[in-house]
Length: 110
Image (cartoon, helix red, strand yellow):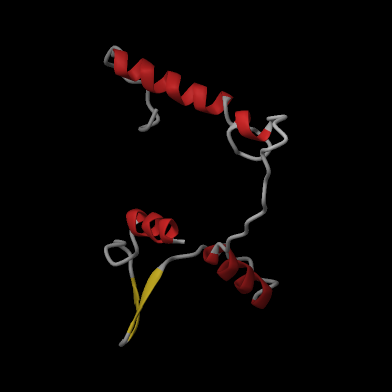
């Protein structure tokens, strides 16, 4: 599946467990909002919801580009980079970009 080809080795018990876990997660996720179905479909009057927002800076950058190039036939895409004191360094290998761990640690401090 990962390599888009039929595996040739017989499936092991762990393969089936992983597939089953994925199918359960899909069934238990609300197709409308993406939250766990037992929460977003709950009739519990004590359960409340709030609205949060976030900004996707890649999307924001692309929208700004389209605004400034309305007739362009090009297909832009966003590429992250790190701003350095010498200017900007385009990071193709992602070595200097914030990590997934750093992102979630920052969110945990909020």
